[in-house]
Length: 465
Image (cartoon, one colour):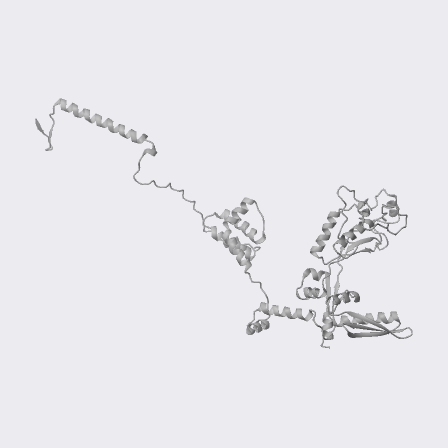
């Protein structure tokens, strides 16, 4: 049966009741089936889901925004040098956009101090600063290697070098070689001027001067004595067979006058090299080191409860060396122990059989021989320019042992008496050839050689004789 609606639409409303029930049942079944399928898809493991397109990578967190509007030059202080500030500035410019200001400025200071001054900090901080500033450090090292030294040159010298087409370094090297040639020994020496150039007066001593002149192999300084009449002699001085001067008179007077005049002539025409003694014998530079386990020698200073100490105080002594000018002895007179069977006052040594080792002095030596053996080795290796003065606390037997150690390494040594009358063992300085001293002091300006050697130029310029 057809029914018409008010809106003009027509619909069929009359269906059999059985058909309607079947339709409703089918709808409910389809609805429940769709719900089950949705639940199965939601609870299925992710590994069993087949995706048709590749998975997208997880999104990384965005870096925090760093404020880079601050001024780098505002962190320069008046104490920063040019190189230190450049290191700090380059470091901050490199990491200004990635590291905050409050953290970057201290890191730049640490990095600049490490590179410029070699400062050390905590290992973690140094490692981080080195990693961040590695490219800057590499460039800085290359700049240091190729850095040019500033040299002040007069305008005349600069124009002359420019006109000659010679660099300043080459000109200075040629001047240096010219200066060395003016003081270097000449071989073979054919004129008296060349002989005087080969002679250097050493320590105002004719003996040392002659020894160094003979080592050059160009001749020697000789003195010839011939009698003129009874008690009168003529003394002549020669340098490499060139006659220098003469004197006449009695033997001793003529010889002394000839030597004095010869030294005066050599000082007028030759350079002088004098060793400067920087250490007085009261200020020794090598102390006494006993063996391990050995007691040090008994104290030489008087104790306050000593009767001698009280007697000296009553006489006005307040401490220090004895004497009105305080130039006397400081310590009591040392009484050395006697370890042999010789009589008192006997100075002759005991005769020993040849080939038998001498262990008499070594048995009673309380020194650390290993230390002094290493000291001798270091002297041979370093060749010091000054004398090694040992303490007066060394006994006679210990000084004998030190002399034998020095003789093994062919070191020059002697025992000298100090102003106080005490014996001191001295290893002489390693001698430098006098012409090498001239080069080091006058041309190279070596600070250590200039400290221990004095060079006096000749009073009269050399001429072609």
